[in-house]
Length: 207
Image 1: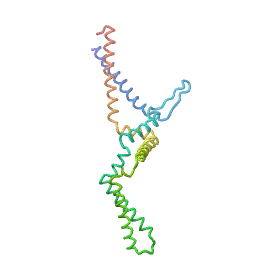
Image 2 (image 1 turned 90 degrees about the horizontal axis):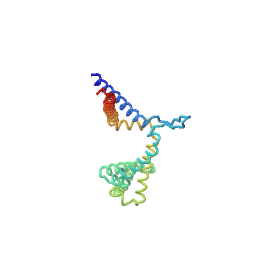
Image 3 (image 1 turned 180 degrees about the horizontal axis):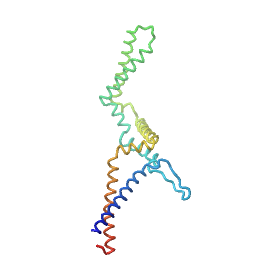
Image 4 (image 1 turned 90 degrees about the vertical axis):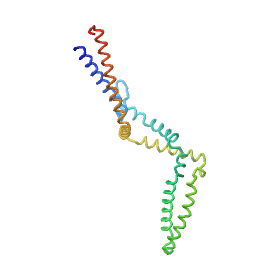
């Protein structure tokens, strides 16, 4: 009975150590947010993600612009029927309003409205032709520029994020996975503790 209790106690101690170790490891991904220096030893302490935030931003920018949203993807999206129709409607509405506002007030309102409608329709048709196949209007170099712009936007957004906000995003996306890591740490610690208890008692001749 004594040996069994001792083995279980060693298992529980191991479980606590494993769980606490994994919890701290996850916390240290983000904390401390700012770099702290220990004067005597010259150590620098900072969370892994805050320390590598710029590198992470560069890597994400490259991945998004190369693998997820390329310049060609943006052009293909513009030619989608639903997007194309919405863009044309918004464009015609904007042109109609701007033309109507800029025509001389001496022109009767009915004529101004007709002229604005006529110009909006003509330009809307041209926009529609462009959106049918936008790739024809862009050179390879311009598509690369779109890709670079996507990359730049992603990098700037990630770099400008407060680390606390970045931590919140990661936890929101992977809370269950992180909790799973904590639990696995406890289970492994429990098993290791039991093994240590058995080996210790074996060497002492109690088993």
